[in-house]
Structure formats: C-alpha cells, structure tokens
Amino acid sequence: MIATLRKTRLSGLIALWACALAFFAIRNPVFFSLANFSSILQFSTLLALVTFGQTLVILGGAGGIDLSVGGIVSLSGLSVAFGIKEGLNPYLASLGGIALGGLLGLINGLLITKFRLLPLIATLGTFYAYNGLSVALTNGAPITGLPQFFGALGQGNFAGIPLHTIFLVIPAFLILEFVLWQMPVGRWIYAIGGNERACRLVGLPVDLIRLGLYVHSGLMAGLAGLVADSWLLSARPNIGENFELLSLTAALLGGTSIFGGSGGLSGSLVAVFFFTSFQAGLQMLNVNAIWQLGFVGLFLIFSVLVDGFIRRGESM
Image 1 (cartoon, rainbow, N blue to C red):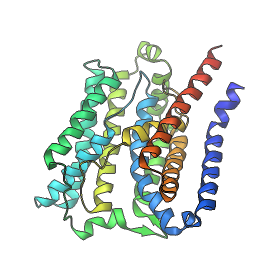
Image 2: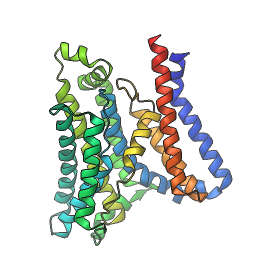
Image 3: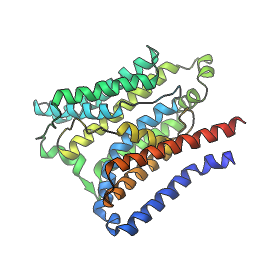
C-alpha cells in the first residue's frame, strides 16, 4: 500500500489539478481563454525557477530549506534595475543580478555548512535581512523607467506561450533532470539526503555539495528576479513576497520528502502549474488573497502529513 501511494502521488496531483481546472472552467468559461493561459504561465515561470532551487535544497537532506528565496528574488531584481538606471549595459546588469543571487545563496550555504546553523534558522535570518535591505534601498517604492527593449524576455510570447517559459523554464527543467538522473552529482544529492553519515564515511564531499545546492537556489531566485524586471519593466522591493511558502509547498506537494533523499522536479513542476492555476481561478471567483494563502497552508500541511505517513509505513 505504501509503495503504491508513493508511486501514485504524482498522478493524484495531476488528477487534482484536472479537477480544479474543470471546476474553474465551469464557474467561469473565461478561465480557459488564451489570455488567462498566458497569464498563468507568466507567473509560473517565476515560481518554477524558485521551486527548482528549493526542491534540490530539500533533496539534499539535513532539514534543508531556503526561506530566503523571496528576498533574493527582490534584491536581485533591484540590483539589475539599479545597474541599468546607472547606465550599465542591460546584459551585464542582468548577469550581475543573477550572480548576486548566487552570492546570497552562497552566504546561506556558508552559514549552514561552515557555521553549522540549522537551515531553518539561517535562512529565516537571511529572509529578514534580504527583504529588509530591499525595502531600505528603495524606501518601499518600485524602481521604474526600464527601457522598453528590456521587456522582450518578460513580455514576449510565441503562440501565447511566454518566451521565458520556452527559453528558461523548459531548458532549466531538462538540464536539472539530466543532472539528477544521469550524472554522479545527482545520485550523490539523493544519497546525501537519504543517509548523510554513510556518504561522509565513503568520502563524498557532503558540505561542498550542500553549499552548491544553496548557491544554485540563489541563482534560480536571481534569474526569477530578472524575469520579473523584464515582465513589469520595473523592480519592486516586494516582488518575491510569499515565494518561500509557495516554493516550499510546491516542492512538498510534488512529492519531495521534507526529510530529503526522495522526490524530484517533475512533481514540483506539476505542483507549480497546479498552484498558479488554482490561484488564478480563485482570483476570477473574487476570493480574498488571505484565503488563497490559507489554501496554500492547508496544502503544505497535507503534503507533510502524507510524507510522514509514507515514511512511517516504510520503516515498519
């Protein structure tokens, strides 16, 4: 029964997504319009990129979690906008913003691997630091006036599919899937998440790999900040708000174990599309944003309960 539950978890999520789509389409036929489809994909890119990084951090085990991703999205986006406004080449400014995301992720990783802080405490601290710095640098106001050509990636589309979905999300997903399933480092990530002590005994560079996972999470968040700037043609200090909760819930709902060592990106990506579709449907039904977050919290609790049930069954 436990093995069956684990195998059917993804198919169950897809079925739940299909039911949600049908419900919202019945309540409001506009839900299946091309404009709404494009809008869902627009936000899905931001959440997908952040969730890819979050998923790998969780897979690495030891209570891995990155609560700072929202702040990294905001700070990276602001750095790109600051650079452009100061006359820096937009392409260099974009690379700088992504690199800043990696640097902020590196800080998280060092706090955890070198100073031995718990991931929850370390990234909760940097969550406040990064978000506070974003607001302090801008006095809470967005940075506007980015050049129109800078919106090509964020606002362009092909057959209703945003260009950033085609050129960022799909390639990132395929590359990371290849790394996880076809390369030694991918197998090491699963092994470390499943049994860290055994990995240390056989000589795997556990701390280095874990540090790399946090750097990768920062890079993905930095890339999301760049897409947000290009989409809105402005940088907002609160653009990453709630990404920590959404990305964590998407990873767990997609089948990644909160204890690490099992799961993957396929389920996370399906969960991202489920969440963005669900939120879009609730908005069309004029459901208050506070209730929308409440639903996310319920999904998070449900995911952890299912994961705990599976683990208890496997240990019996």
